[in-house]
Image (tube, rainbow, N blue to C red):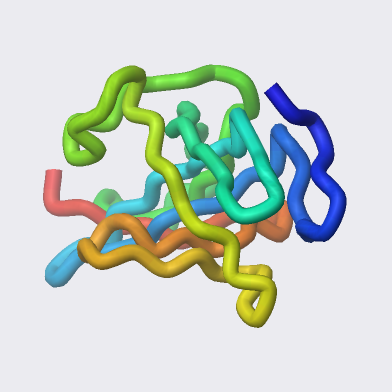
Length: 115
């Protein structure tokens, strides 16, 4: 496993998040677990509630190195592979609603739900 790769703006351990939904905002945090010059592998991590705004909304943050399963990934250990685009270092785009990843900046992320 590579911890730092030349010519990429990332390191193993960096956190990204995906945020998607129609009537609610689903947030999943992802940690880079493997890295090459052109590809990053991400695994989902647990999140913690930071602030509750209403009974159905608030902010959340990742818990680094506490890995979870993510059924939508449909892969072993929920690991998702992304190609690195040097023109967009803070976003890694996917072709499904849940898999565009944004670099986590350390600030709580808004989420909402109906349960």
